[in-house]
Image (cartoon, rainbow, N blue to C red; front, side, top):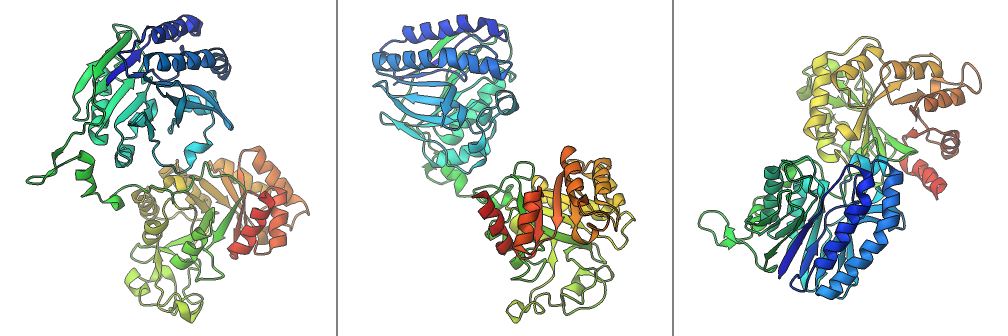
Amino acid sequence: MKACVVQPAYSYDYEHSDALFEWEMNMLDSCDESMDLIVFPEYSNVPALAKTKEQALASYEKYAAPLMKKACETARRCQATVFINGLYMTETGLRNTTTAISKTGEIAGHYFKQHLVPSEMYTYELDKAYTYEPSEPTILEVDGVRYGFLVCYDMYFYESFANIARHDPDVMIVCAYQRSDTHAALEMMSRFCAYNCNSYVIRSSVSLGADSPVGGSSMIVAPDSTVLCELGNTVGCGTAEIDPHKRYLKPAGFGNPDAPHHHYIENGRRPWKYRPAGPAIVLPDDLMPYPRMCAHRGFSTIAPENSLPAFGAAVALGAHEIEFDLWASKDGEIISLHDDCLDRVSTGSGFIYDLTYEELKQFDFGIKHGTEFEGLGVLRLEELLEKLAGHTVMNVHIKHVNDTDPLPEATLQKIIDHIDRYDCRKWCYFMSGNPAILEQLQRLAPDIDRCAGADGNAPCEDLVDKALKYGCTKIQLFKPFFGHNEPDYLEKAVAKAHANGIRCNIFWSDDPEETKRYLEMGIDTILTNDFQRNANVLHNMKK
């Protein structure tokens, strides 16, 4: 089949939109019956730079319908499969969409861009909710050919190539702008994609001018990474003959039979070597909606507090957050335990910071909850992250024997290093009522959110001021400390926090009626020991 890749001129001047769009329409008219596959670039119905949401919407309203009509007519006239990318209206709003049109001129399907750039999210305000949901790669079979898709920014997420390859595409349709990369970089990415996906790559972009060293580079690449056609910054189209069902087979290691590249890779893949991924990963802290329920020390009414069974039960039941407390043992291991004293929750006695990890391992941390948990050991932060990183938001309460002294920075750095090892920065925030620790955290890990905890009997409104001082995004109100000054001062504290863009946690509520009152008051996150009963309150209120 003969593939045709189209490369229009591009302008940063929105006033050139009509002329650029007319060129696109004329190019569709010039396509002939020798062409079997025609690909246009990203935002073909926004032909010049739209600097505002209003300009993008105006282009969509003016150009989308005539462009799609012309593309369908071209597909029928040429008996070709046509791919057009642009703004497309769905039930939930406008999306950056590649539309496939069959030889009969009918819409064969759509691909929605998976990785939106900031201008699409915040300037154009495109529909983005779907990008936070797990999904499989889009594969459309049109006239006997299996097509996979990437749009511009998608091309940079190389980790997706292996997943796309599993679905065996014949051709990858890549509609792009990519206006800042050099021709060499764009060729490298396209060849890398073709080789890894074992498919042809048909990449259409826009020309930034004949002398520009960046942008453009519309091209056609074979599965063995051979470049069959490359336009540089030439305005026009390029063609190449391809056999979409042809695959490139390589020696799968010395002495082994030939196989596709991704088969060779899959035989040796070790997924536990990578960052957390997959459908079990939840939205990070800055994107997860409010209000939330936080399982305090895990689901601690059914399993020993600060244990993997308690945390795992809460996460399995859909806890938005879990809360746990951290201490350093005598030899510097980071331990999850609420009390500094061992007597209440274990067969040991004494203080956690006076004992080494090996000494702590000798005690039973399950038997006091029930005989069914006999033999449960002490939990380290590293073990908790290993099992649950990315599966819930973590409220990390850092404890210290003295409520006003700083912690040894080596201890805090070890906590941060563990979080980094499991790529969990976006899924956790630090909580402390200790101003010295808040200052340390602000300095050592400013991009990990902080929550200011209550100080003794200080008024709740003072807590907001502390949060602002240390750049905290949340406060954590402590039930015994509020209500002693004036009846409505909790409401005032919440109002002051929200007025300053600060979220409000409350510790705690195990009573469904109390939970309901807190939610109605505007509390953002409620910590609870009895997770399921109180989570049901939030669930029913949402319904």
